[in-house]
Amino acid sequence: MQIHISPTDGVPIYLQIVNQIKYLVSSGRLAPDEELPPIRVLAEKLLVNPNTVARAYRELEQAGIVLKRRTTGTYVSGLATRMGRRDRVKVITRRIDALLADARHMAIPLDELIDLVRQRDALMQSQSTEV
Image (tube, rainbow, N blue to C red):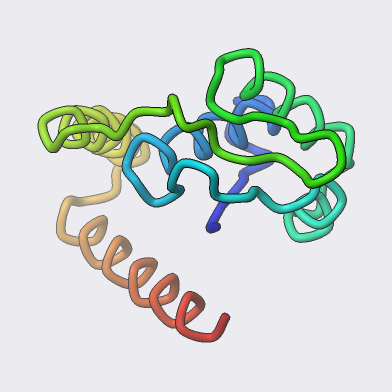
């Protein structure tokens, strides 16, 4: 499970975790009945307080995205739905629009932005093959 947080994002860290797990579930990257990492393990990986991860998991449980099983852990709910292609494209389009707006405000040309996206993608690809 790949989660990336940004302390400078302006969005609370617990909400970044919630949003990314929701996306992973709805896009099918996390399947129903798949176990999420224990709170302490995810907190150590993300370098955040375990209470932050616990809050995110509570929010996800209240939303019906995950289920807590008392002695075995936290699992993706069987009721969680997959996103269709059209919905996935909508989500990505909104993120692209925000990225383009930020780049324009910071005077970063489109070709430089595209190069940066390619570099970040290559980095993420190499990191995912290392794990």
